Length: 157
Image (cartoon, rainbow, N blue to C red; front, side, top):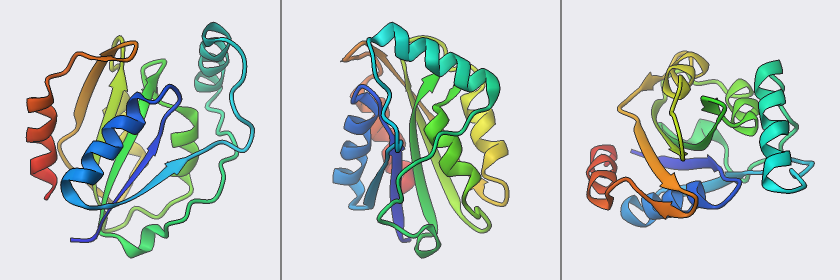
């Protein structure tokens, strides 16, 4: 199995989980970044995110240092923005060929997961989307047990 972790993180919670997965399974890792960063206070970014999700907007993202064609297993991580994956993740998902890939999605959130994992399954057409992981935070405080996260990571290897 050749695995890569690809994630988008705004506040750092998703980044921390992605790095934990990398440490546990030794996969390559890449962070999705928007060309134009989100700016302003938290509430302004939340409002912009809601508008982007509602419009199906896909912001331009910077090129990644990995080629998805080199991997058979892809771990995808995103914060939940208005009940789905972040718009930057949407951009990435739409730009890839998922044929023959095995995908393990995880999402960090402080509220309701919504239809995030259903959306992953629909966006990764041609992939086998495996068990997902909903990871809850209260701001920067992890609320999902580390034991549950480690159990999920164990299913990837």
